[in-house]
Length: 341
Image (cartoon, rainbow, N blue to C red; front, side, top):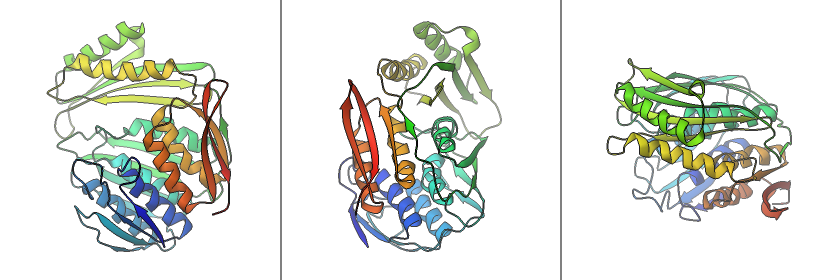
């Protein structure tokens, strides 16, 4: 039994999600206290509870204290079972964070899986579905995994109702890879998504992107939805390179001008472009776990966040690897290598 303190480091939901994933894969039970202690509303929110319930269903786990608001939890996993699953968050909580918990574990299932999650698909403080599909999914593919992600319906706060389908083929041994360079740029584009809102809002966002980045109109895509649940807006910028794809995003809000939404995404992209790291801050955080499962790997990254340091520490509690960060030729390098627990 591994004991964890959810207030350590970054103190958010990633501690719980990583623990659930690795508990399922390694068969190691865990207890965690002070769940999301550093958040404005500590404890399990609906999306975190659904992640726990989904993990429990996939591996037949015994779980204690699985309730909204719970700040402690005990999880005893059983064997991972592939198959067809459907989970409804019941709110606009993030579907992608639930999927991030399940996808690596289902690679170790006894048969292929198809997982549908209903909830929010484009949320503040969570990766959009396009990030999972284009950025994270590409790294998994490079490691030998077959994971297909399909956005069936957009879901925005507060209505939710979005739907994502993930199809996972078992892959019990991931390949060790290195991503040290981005390589030449292959494609770049911005997407402004509007659900039941005037298209002019998205056009204003794209105008800012085009002006600040000097991109032509054919790199600026307006996606106007009319049959989704509730109003919503997301702006995403995708940059694809030879070795890595990154997706940067911001979610519109009625209290935030379209120009401010666009500036936020462009600033994040330019910060990445001005660095020498192959992986951006959020992708770097997420690929440490599959690299640990592979038994090693290396990549350069934009910056080391507290989120990443916390995630690395939790991974090391379950898997016999050492995750370290060092400076080499003016660049930050993450090194994942085998060690002894």
